[in-house]
Length: 79
Image (cartoon, one colour):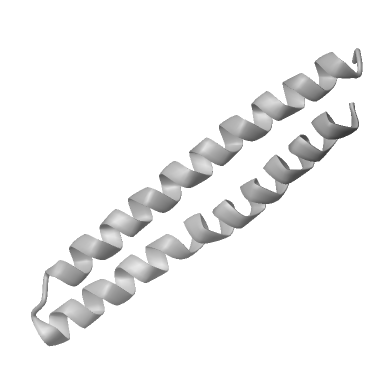
């Protein structure tokens, strides 16, 4: 049960970290668009959009892992 709790706790911490990345993603994309306007380099926006998409995918994976860990914790502790 202790190991399961630690797995759940790690999953909860990962959700917090990835949520912060997800919250910063729109700002990063907007900064890249501003920089692109000045430098005429559209690759910056493509990279920023890709990183924003990756941040969203990591967050969704973290939430899914957290849900599974919580269900396992409830099963192991019988409620």
